[in-house]
Image 1 (cartoon, rainbow, N blue to C red):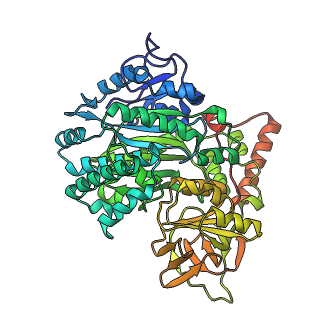
Image 2 (tube, rainbow, N blue to C red; image 1 turned 45 degrees about the horizontal axis):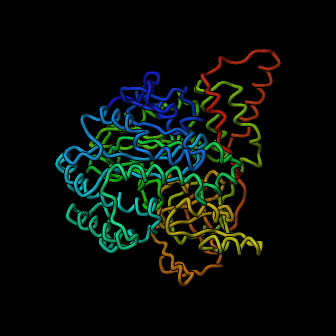
Image 3 (cartoon, rainbow, N blue to C red; image 1 turned 120 degrees about the vertical axis):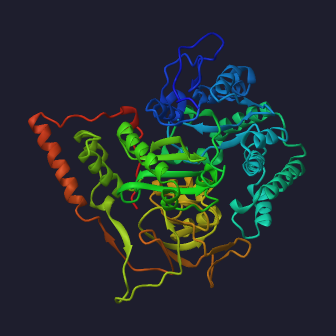
Length: 572
């Protein structure tokens, strides 16, 4: 695939708010910016201009999100037909809707301000009963083809047709019978795809659309419509984001992390978002697609297995991330896919982090020459002892407590409260003035409103880098995911952790520092990373001296648009 680039000036016949990337041909007449393309697409452009591997795409700008009329215009095939043709030309002879060599597409949202997981994504657009056979012949991988098809039917049913995710998830669990879904063979996935098609027909009264063009039209409409979803509106209200900025939609050539043993999907941070420590902080799943990691419905592993199985690719990822930090001027939250041992970068944005990480990262980037002194001072503004302190569990009478479970920690600190299982329980606890901890099966952003009312989140499934975990960290909530021993019975309003049974309203404690779960309440004290306050004081002293002398260190390259998006941090 070609390197992503913004192409030549606009030619007649292409809408001025339609942008081509990595494709030969015309593009939007207006200068690309985060406000027009959304930050996701704008940063894709920047990554590709750096020479990083990014699949080609076209972007329907935020202009089309303005109202129902412009959104309807964006779904018209005549609008983006020239862009689709250019995308096909950049995709090694693949054709969208072609039964012999089908081009498959992803359709993703992207606002000018980061809103992790608050809008929708659809993958594998273009698969149907005919093109799935073409994909099998094209790749020689029937498991990939049927896995992609069943994923499309399920996600399309949920996002476009409004069907409950459980309709398809329950069928998958029935087939897996306790196995990891990645152990299903192509025959089982073929049968599952056919069962999903039946469920779709039964639930909607209409057959799953076999027209690739209709799939793309409806996917674009659904992603634009998700700008006004309940969770997106709640997030904007909570973070002071104006609804008028809208979202863009990126239509991009698919790359497949579910192509086999040398493929997978990952999400990571270029530094630890909890402490700010240097080194990649990655969740990865072999033989999976990106939504498996970020959706919060699957549990992922760290980078160790990726590093062991594909050491050269791991080195390539490290080098790419080092370049990203220097170019973007901050710690990055990135998504990537590995297809048959080849790396593709799909997203980067400034990573949301704790106050402790904010200070550590700013100080380290200053020391490394990535940012200048005024920028470091700006990023550390307001980070005093109270903001930087973290609660931790202390032993009672010198006797360490025994946890009832361990999980993966997405954020640090300690939270104690009564168990609640949904937003209604969280509202009731808030009305009673009682601290609460939200327990859920999956780490999903649909629970953000409930999470905002509680002190922490514990989930049975999910990854540290899932969208819900990212949001929890931004909110300053203690968040533990992938607690394998946790079982939730919503009908009985009970949970089980191993042999222990607890009811909604019972107290529970989450230790995000050690990734432990305790029954009842624990004893805590406050702790601040050693030396951090002294380093911040030295930073302030250096800035004061530079101002007094009218001098400053040589300025590193800093992007003012990027600094305008510095995450709003909450105390832990």
